[in-house]
Image (tube, rainbow, N blue to C red; front, side):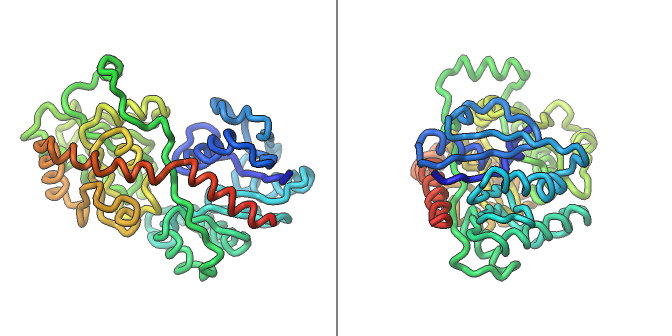
Length: 374
């Protein structure tokens, strides 16, 4: 029985991209006994994950009495515990590994935006990410990339050998699907006081995702569709900081734009299902999971044309060459006006959704872990 250690910190608190990636893998691994013993390490207790009750998952809550920083925990608290637990292989699901790792190691890189666009990060955060990611990909026995685009970026910035990088796409949680119970959807609308035609954005709000441009374009759209509401779901992590409430107020859209912050997965599925259009205009992504979740729930998607988007979504989404206000407004109006086009987009997405099954991604990832251990 192989002893595999996993950095499970991304499952703490309010999981976002990396946490969702790890949760999907663990859910699938919990259903198939591979003969492995998985040891999950975190700084606080992991709650709300039924799959982690599996007998081959072992949860280790390691608190630090000296410093609470993630760097200190990863680099000084974790390594001696991995040695004590006789871990044979360690899996870092989000960019980094302990620099003093004594066993074999693998790491997943979701993108290298901090290299490609350093202006999106504070100097301290930029330096931290660059240092840890560079050391991790060079130290790792295998590097997982969530797309071929990300693989090419890793090679470009870190000069990592091609055969060391394995592409394992992000996968789709099975809970993201159409809800046919009209009363359930209406009840959700009433609870949040949402009326009219809903346009939706979800995900951490970052500078590269053009949320201010979406708000301004929506201001143009409501002139034609006054019944429309724009819902923005996600924590504001912009750098430099963008004051979104002030932008909404200055645009005269106080009653038409809802800034909701973080929501749990159950509510997220409901938001996708009540929305008529999902908008995700990111100028740089390694994959782009929210648009896939939206499509799986039967919601047409507007994205910005980038290499990863072309690779993952092909012709199943509406692509804009750039996030210009006039182009965004025109695309939103066209989709709201054209029910047949919306239905055709969802029909084409059916095959795409099957392609990104969590079962296949989890099995492929585990297969590569076993090859490292062989």
